[in-house]
Image 1 (cartoon, rainbow, N blue to C red):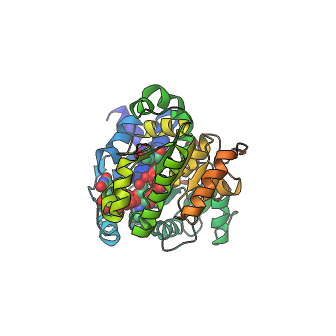
Image 2 (image 1 turned 45 degrees about the vertical axis):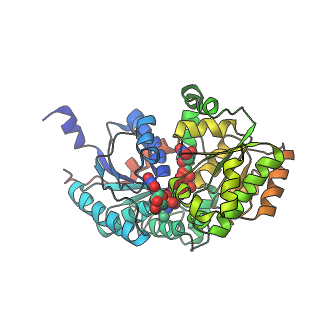
Image 3 (image 1 turned 30 degrees about the horizontal axis):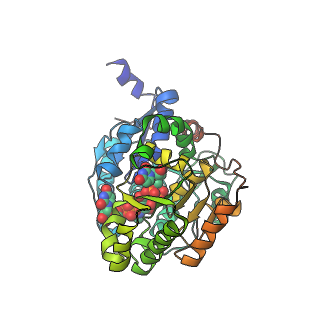
Length: 398
Ligand code: UD1
Ligand code: UDP
C-alpha cells in the first residue's frame, strides 16, 4: 500500500457539492485552505451537478482559481426547478452511497444546494452549510426555500455575518449546544465570509493578470459595472424594461459608461422581454455595453476600478463592499442587510425614480464608512479546523 493510500485512513472524507457559478468560486477558498494547511487531514471529493455548464459559467473558474477538477459531473443542465432538483438528487445520492463520506459541504442557496442537502440528510450524512442563516424573508424567491431546508438539515452551520447568525437563533437554533453535533443538535457559527477570503487573495493578481479594462476601453472610476440575473428581474418584462430604462437613461444623462457582463439567462431574455424600442435604443447607446460573463479575476478587476456597482447578485453586492464601492441593489430586499444599514448600498427594486435618486445620492456621497463586516480573510481555514474538531471519521470509508 502506498503512503498516500495509507494516509486516507486518517483523513476526514468530505464530499463538496457545487453547481452554480458562485459556488464554484466559493469552493476555491476551501480548496486553497485544504491544499495549504490540511492536505494530510482532509480528503475532498468534488461533485459538480452541472447546473451551470457554459465554459464561462463553470470551467473558467476551475482553471483560473486552481480548483481541482471535479471527480464527478452530473451534467444536469437547465430544467424546471423540480426536474432539475430531482435529477441532481438522484445523481448525488448514488455518489454519496458509493463514496460514503464523513460529511458533505455545500454553499449558499441554489437548487444544487437543496438537492445535496436532501440527498445527504436522507442518508444521514452530516451536512456542513457554508453561508448559513441568510434570509430575504421572501419565500417567493426560490433561494429562500433552499436555504431554509439546507439550514434545518445541517450539522455545522457557518454564517458569514452577525445578522445571518441571529436569523438562525430566531429560528430556534441554540448557541450553547454541546458536542457531539448532529442535525438535531447542530452547531452554529459566525465566522466571516469565504468570498472575502477570495477577494483578498485574488485582488492584486486580478489587476496583474487581466486586460479587461483596456479591452473594454475603461478608465478607473469612470464607469459603472452592472449585473442582472435574478429570475424575478429577467423573467418579468415590466421589471426588465424598467431596469434597462434606468441604465439607459442614466448613461445618457450622466455621460457615463456602463458595462454589463450578462448572465446567459439575461442575454437570452433581453430581446424577448424588452420593448423593441428600448432594445434598439440600447444598441445605439454608445455608453452602454453588454458582454458575455467575465472570469472571476476580470470581475474583480472591474469591481476594483468601477465608480459604482449596480446589481441584483448576492455575491456582487458583497464584493462591492469588499472593494469599497457604493452599490445600487436592484431588489426589494437583501440578505446582506449590513450593507444597506451602513449606507454603502441602497435598495431600489425595479423602480426608475428610486434608481435615479440612488445614483444622485452616490454621486455626491463620499463618506461611506466601510468597516470590516466579513472577517479576517481566513474563514475557510477556520471552517476546516471546526470540521476536523467536530466531524467524526467513519471507520468503514473506502
Ligand atoms: C442560479 C441560482 C441563483 C444564483 C445563480 C448564480 C437557483 C434556483 N438559482 O440561478 O440562486 O444566484 O444561479 O448565477 O439555483 N444558463 C445557460 N448556461 C449556463 C447556465 C444557465 O445558458 O451555463 C441559462 C439557461 O437558459 C437556464 C438559465 O440560464 O435556464 C437559468 O439557469 P439556472 O441555473 O436555472 O438558474 P440561474 O438563474 O443561473
Ligand atoms: N462573477 C463573475 N463573472 C461575471 C459575473 C459574476 O466571475 O460575469 C462572479 C462575481 O464576482 C461573484 C459571483 O460571480 O463572485 C456572483 O455570482 P452570481 O452573481 O452569478 O450569483 P449570486 O451571488 O447572486 O448567487
